[in-house]
Length: 173
Image (cartoon, rainbow, N blue to C red; front, side):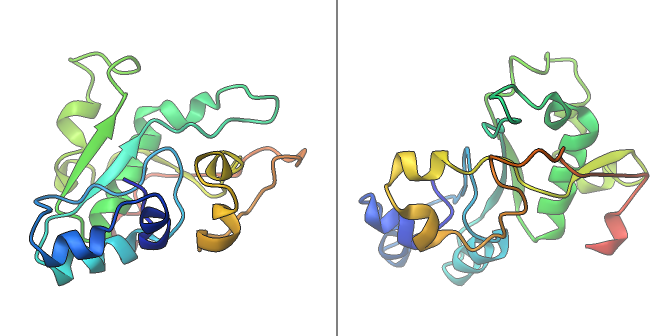
């Protein structure tokens, strides 16, 4: 489900009411794009005593020219994303559409579900976001109404994505 309560309400999903009525057993916010900081979803779920999982779904955001940014599909990048989610107080991690990038024996499946397995391993952090134009494709005008995350790069930018490769940022939250 989308990670914005307002966006959800506008598409017919009243997640706040459903949580109040104890109709949601597990919250897994986000998807192909993010609108709000993960902390908002975590706070909402914790308020209603609902477990919340960090989403490491397929990144539909593309490089300029609509080519996949394959750096976003490395083990190091998924480690960084998972550890950032764990440090944001999620109760678990889930992935979506990763089976065709990572075979069953790939380390992603044994590392991401346990934050202690991520400590001391190489991680690749994405500092900026790429395209965000697909948000309005799901709900016209939604990006301006609901996006609370900074847009660090426009789709028309000639700049390459910014990457931060560090051995371990786990103790920095």
